[in-house]
Image 1 (tube, helix red, strand yellow):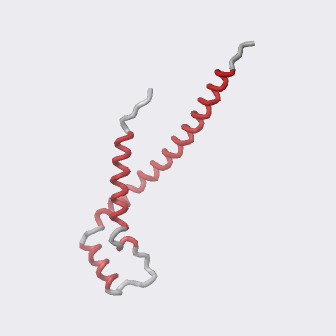
Image 2 (image 1 turned 45 degrees about the horizontal axis):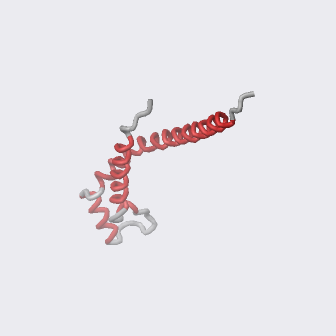
Length: 103
């Protein structure tokens, strides 16, 4: 019988790589579906931040005119800014990764 220990080890290693890569691709595909769905919300937040409406909402909050139990992360000076910064960095990363092709 042929001594094929190296061959078997190679096939097992490649099988693990296939399983790992397949799982990663499925997770990324699901994440990209969520990312695509979030684009409208991101665009709306970007437009809102720094607008006259945002400034009025911020001023009313500072004046105590809004309910105390109202969530107001969108009125923080960093909340939307940090999100937009993260979005830009992620878009740059996606652009850097996109030219890689496998055949």
